[in-house]
Length: 302
Image (cartoon, helix red, strand yellow):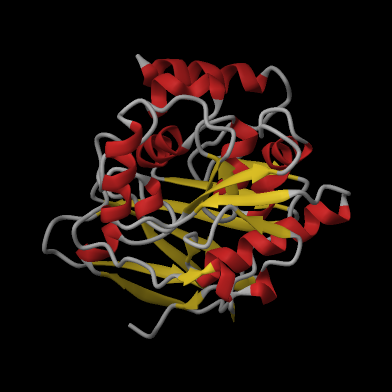
């Protein structure tokens, strides 16, 4: 039923001039996003075709891992190194912290700080990080103290992945504060998404949390924002279509889904730079960037 509703929603979007996601190769296979920043991947792209070898374990690593009540943090997941935010004042300009126990992976903190710098340019500058990475012990303590209505059991929270953080405002509740409104409108431009929107509770299984933001990276955040979908819907659609294309601020991307069988490596031809992420459901998503665009990794020789 949810699948039918999602398809219907996409069809309705067409009536408002939105481009539906379609398999790569069709004449209407691009979703064009006119705002935002292209992904800042580290290495330049290459036009040469090579073989990308994917290990089965890579289905359980990356920025698109799904963690919810049905999909716990995978046992083989590589958990991040984290820093206490009080130890990184160089990245905390204009950002408050609830207490001295909040931790984040340095890379996620840098990405968040860059987003907050953009918010300051718009006159929004009263941000407060209230929670970041939690190990299972911290999650268990929170779950025992708050109960199932307010916390997930250990191993079933995105905070255990190191890809999410809770953001507050010194001006009031996030649902009303300028900080919450700015993030809801602009976070996608920086690779973040509001993970638990008010109208998606039946899909996510989590009540509306206007403070909880998750990093998925570009172009995924742009596609999710434009199509009005959450991570569960986005991953289901990628699996269904196999391949889609997106253009974000003039940069073209191809997003491809592959199933990975347990214990069996997968090799695929790839051209140029790429990013790789598992989905925590037995699949991997390969995102390639057009030749000449900034890229994440170079595909090695076959």
